[in-house]
Image (tube, rainbow, N blue to C red; front, side, top):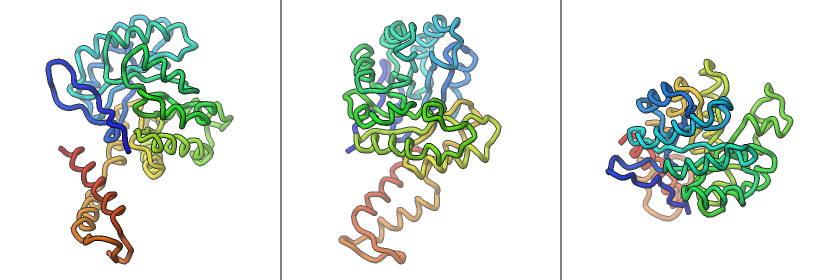
Length: 288
């Protein structure tokens, strides 16, 4: 059973936040770049990650922290927002968590999580749902315990660090890390939470992006993190039910009469109807 981790309502009303299970695109936005933050408010991504970590130069991290607080308070036109803090071995980690609690975003994102205790600490300090990043061999081994930690809302894959930790060459195909990726999906599903694929690094390779999105969708990821606005449309499309798929799902629901029965050359039962209803509900929620 999925945990009901929705972004909490904000003071003053506004539209309902999109639940994590429906998020397709999570856009990383450096909190040090005011222009990128302003632009993100008008983009068609589902989720904003204000980054205090890798995309921010070390000398700018104090000012980025203040900018992230201001950006969260200004809002993102109804989009759910997380702040990614620095890892616990960084001097910015403590001040980041204090700032996140003051900013009160929808989620806190914690990089380089290798055990459930790190997720617990972030939840305890910030009082916010936690999205741990699984990006190391230790994180993969402990992913099921991390996913089941109270307060954890979803898992996000850090594919670049994961490759490095596994000694997988940058030019190796995704199949080289497929066991690790599927372990993250397995951990999330066993805990009833959402899970997201990692970023695609090649900004201008739309064909490669589409291929990787499709691979992630077929593995079971709910969506994907991205690092550039040019990746939004393809990623949204890949993780949205297609019209033909929705039509087939509706026809199956309509045809079902109970028990096991033959339909369109195959056997279907209640499980297939539930699956079809999920497709239709996802399509209607994303469209509406």
